[in-house]
Amino acid sequence: MLIGCHVSFNKDKQLVKSTEEAISYGANTFMFYTGAPQNTNRSEISYELTSEAYRLMELHHIDREKVIVHAPYIINLANRDHLEFSVRFLTEELKRCDQLGMSYLVLHPGSHVGVGIEQGLHNIIEGLNTVFIEYRGKTKILLETMAGKGTELGKTFQELKTILDGVYENDRLGICLDTCHLNDAGYSVENFDQVLAEFDQIIGIDKIGCVHVNDSKNPLASHKDRHENIGFGTIGFDSLLRVVYHPLLSDVPKILETPYIDREYAPYRCEIAMIKEQQFNPNLREQVKEESQK
Image (cartoon, rainbow, N blue to C red; front, side):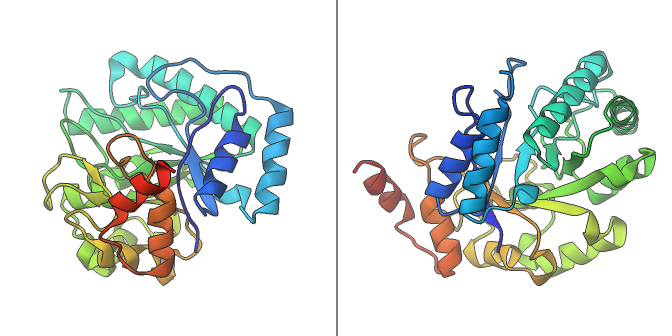
């Protein structure tokens, strides 16, 4: 089972910091931003630190090919007013992924901000086609399934298929399923076999490169996108466990993006342990705080 979580990446230790944090949580994969997701500030990638991180990964049986990078939130290919910036910054991020030796970059498709779904999807397709002309490296973009908050696109499998069909080199694209977003978009994770069958019919299971495993604070089809700790939301522990252990996704990295306890304490070590043990811990939050304060 490939299970991990979102971890830090800073200018001082870079990928070493990310790897050490993942190891401390008992993870065998992880996801990170190459810099702050809300701005363009980026430090130069260190070859020495990257090489040190590779050695750590090998020592702790972390497959570098299964580590995930997340693109910054400020990229919005659906908004034509910011399309030039988004294309340029996304291209730069892909090149940074190459420098780090990472194979996958998760990207929010974008929000159309009022121009409508059809035009927004057209803008995304145009943007991705331009990016793939400029960027010829090996990192694949994984379009994330979205909750449909506001004018978000990528909330349905059909919208994602429209993007895939419109991109000339769509073998360089894949999909990242997010369980909270699926729930909030109207796909019942409790009936995950049915959801996966629908996805396979429309897009194809082979396109899934990552799964974000999150519970949701919201009911089905709420279109709100508020993550919850595993087993404490409306999806529930058993349903999420079936996703994590689904035989058709055994080789796909599963990444937790659940909220910190009291916005201060990382829950990941305890959540990963709970998933590995396949036993829900109703005292998870108290345990996280107690362990963090020692």
